[in-house]
Image (cartoon, rainbow, N blue to C red; front, side):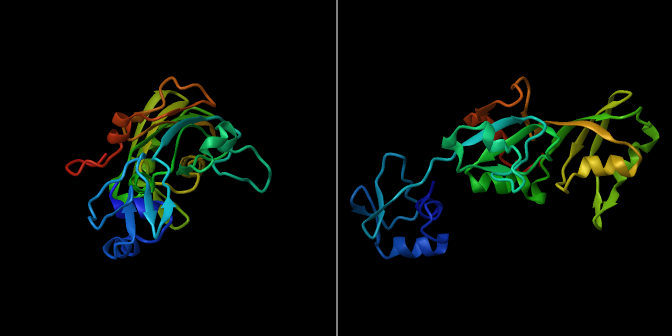
Length: 234
């Protein structure tokens, strides 16, 4: 992590302000004044601004298998269980990337890496999110084009990218948008009720056999798989 990003992540100020501090010789690494903007302190270095030690938590990202009944927030005014109740206290500074509504299940990511969160939520990157949908009755395949063409929700055209029929009442769908309760509302607009909704995949990252209610830290290779490919967006 470059020095200006390190200082910004420590809450010192904007990157531009941090650049000014570096240029003014007010930043030291291990007691030595550093004016090189490309310097990259590591976790063992002592970084100070005006002789005050600053600290940055190392980036960490978790995959959590969210069960139904938990809300995707840190605190809930209605005192419901939150996804953070499933995690040790040491992860209390993380934030969730996107949401799953209370009754939905599956893969949700939590991180302290703002750049990663931006990559996964910004529309320009078109990150695939795959879901398993269980309906209250048999799906009429003639309605599939309506899901793909789009349905107006809150004045926006909500679209599903791909629909795969697994059984008469079970579908796999791929979404690239993030409208509130989008999948449930789209099927409701066509006269169906979603009985169960599970997110199986985000980008190339799959839930696989992670038990419900459990979490694990993503590996470096998994994090790299979430980076945008400039020649082919996911």
